Length: 78
Length: 78
Image (cartoon, rainbow over all chains, first blue to last red):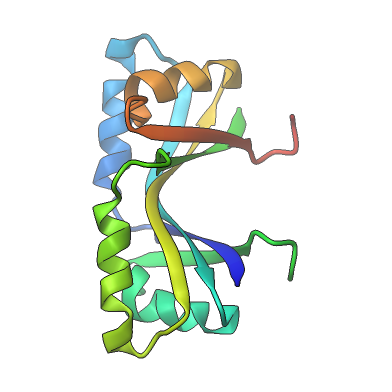
């Protein structure tokens, strides 16, 4: 089994209401100097056939119309 | 400004309904051999003072009762 992490984020140019909500909440909590907040999802899993993870992202984990995804292998393989 | 990524995941032992939902959806989509799916969040941002990101996670980004977080610097700094 190969361990992998999938990072899913809103595409450039797509509104990110969660990120904007974080940015608006910052001043009241005493944080300044934090910008360009983007909120996405992370999925960690173990796969027998990591070659199919791209297909899994397209079909289930991400919405390719509005999200980009990135697959990271966590077991040192390429 | 330092770029950073925060990974937020359900603590070990905490139920992860999103991960379970993904696992249950897999067979109907033709995927086998995928296990231990955990769904979390990813926040990417730029911070003037990255030393305060732990505090930001505790106060706003994560729920420390049920979630663990991990801060990754994306600009090569430690």
